[in-house]
Amino acid sequence: MKTDEYGQTILDIDDVFAALYSGKTVTELTLDDVNVIEQFNSSVEQNADNLPKIKLYKKPEVSIVEFDKKNQTQWFMPREYENFSMIEFLLDKTTNEEEYQRVVAELELFIQHNMMPLLNYLKYLVDTMRSNNIVWGVGRGSSVASYCLYLLGVHKVDSIKYELDIHEFLK
Image 1: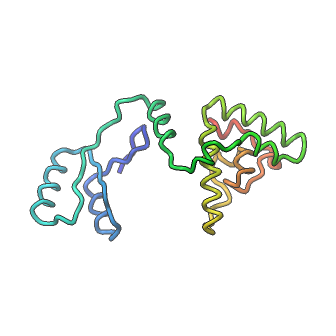
Image 2: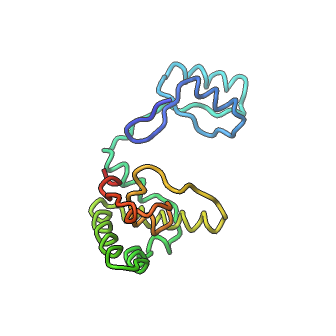
Image 3: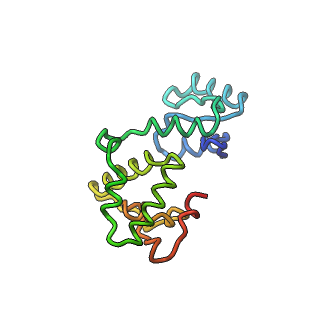
């Protein structure tokens, strides 16, 4: 299995069989080997119409920036989260000047990197997980450097307390 620069997974034939033997419902498989695809799909047509056919991997015909932008506009979230006032919400959660200044600095970076829709989506995701009693980890990787993500509840690491630099998150 490999992943392209767009984050799309490309399987090899061993991955296909592992997916099929796992017992999970498989609806779409993508490979980049035309010969294997033809052989597999022919076998499925002749012997097992309950299996999915394999599709040929196609690299997107847009830049990675355009690809990400398009995918970010296709996120499913209720309209109330799309129109949610994230800046006001985060600033209201601050309790002192240091927190306020950190949130302002981070929000400027989120805006500069066109990541405000991501914050709205994360708010929706956290709210959904909480309302369904889903447990998630305390934090992982560079995301714990963001105080805004801490305030949203994405992770449980207070980046101000541990003096973590937001630039570690946005590298």
